[in-house]
Image 1 (tube, one colour):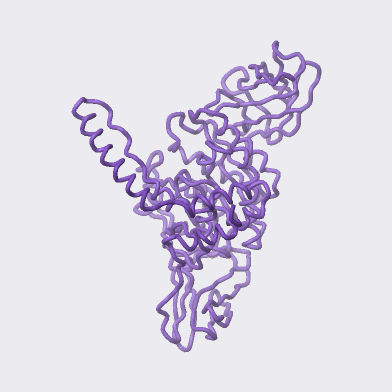
Image 2 (cartoon, helix red, strand yellow; image 1 turned 90 degrees about the horizontal axis):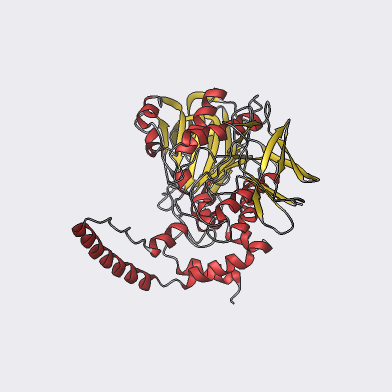
Amino acid sequence: MPNAFSLLRNIALTAILVAIVPTGLSAGEVKFANIFSDHMVLQRDKRVPVWGWAGTGDTVAVTFAGQTKTAVAGDDGKWSVVLDPLKADANPQSMVAFLDGKITEIQDVLVGEVWLGSGQSNMAMTVARSLDLEKEKAAANLPTLRHFREASTASPTAQIDSTGTWEVCTPDTVGGFSATLYFCGRELHRELGVPVGLINSSVGGTPIESWIAGDAQLAEPALKADVEAAAQAYSKFDLAAAKTKHEDDLKRWQEQVRSAKKAGKKVPTKPRSTVDDRNRKGGPGGLFNGKISPLIPYAIRGVLWYQGEANSRDKANLYGAQLSLLVTDWRSRWNDEFPVAWVQLPNFDRDGQGWMEVRQQMLETLKLPKTGMAITTDVGDAKDIHPKNKQAVGKRLSMWALGTVYGKSVATSGPLPASHEVSGEKMNVSFSHTDAGLVAKDGELLGFELCGKDGVWHVANARIDDDEVVVTSDSVDAPVGVRYAWAANPVCNLYNGAGLPASPFRLSE
């Protein structure tokens, strides 16, 4: 097999996408990176990098909130300054770049809390597709809450500038905001009383490996072979043959539609284009290159991640290594150990073990510092992979942020398994995040299973004893493993006193 690095280079040579490089700058002209634009929100209480482009060797002065910083553009035309930490400010201000008597001005700039949201379709899903749209629109006159949708696409090479615009939250604009980000940000805005900026960089139907830089994946032993194989497959993809096949599939589908309508039967699903899928996902690291790299090092408070569905079909056991790498690599590139939280996969009818395995991997990744997880096994939709109750998802993410990032007195998670031990025929599981005590919601405690040395799982009896659950089964004399809510659409009811559900889990001796 060719060297993995050469494969990744081949992706760059064969891709039709090219780097976004600022062009057309006239002499003495200065440009900000696109993320720095009207209506933006800057992160408070942190150093704030600001960058853009000018002519090689030009000296650029940037002024904001009483500060003036200067920089000289390098050989590539890029300049960069760093503002000293700013205090939260809801009063609109201007940021100005000066060069040779010419100015470039950004208006209506606020200072507050900035969160980056990323992932696949459930992060991309808009307020317009969520519950109670008209009610939400009526309550969306929030001029100091803003949303930036990163509109760039996957790329074989790391891009240097983004595309998109900042929008002020109004009843007319909120429908296009990421629902998960908005409902989380709205709670933060309400509780903290400061402006909130939400950066949405997400693409539906995409795997986590598209969002992690290719070189970082190659350096991870557990992932190296898979990223090499993916790079090779990407570089060998026959675009012409794929287009021809899709055209033929569409013709057959159109005939099937006509026949189905004539017979009064259900219309078949329109065939997907493998070319569109390839372009949407990119090769290894393609979405990192196109949609994350251009944002670095914009100052943010933290990251919210909503993804995993696309990785639940194949090699779900790698998800923990991938999620851990995404967190550590993004932090490294930002040079900031910012907090990161993700949404655990919700209840949904899906066959196989992958859905549960991704949940387990998400749970285990909480070992990383400054991480959290919104548990959503009670707010999904068994028949819809895009549950509409994003209000609950955003609320739970905001509770984690308010409690762990901002020091508010609020429950931050549902119960998480802390330890377990065998006591004769019993398995005792202790929990953290019990918040006023464990609760079996609506009746007897359900969802627990035990297994013995034979590895066969049996439905178990379970009872709450303070911050522990005692699990037994008439079919298991000597338990070696216990699991809870181990089904894609589980029947389970363990909660804490704050009304948050327990995470599904699997534990063994």
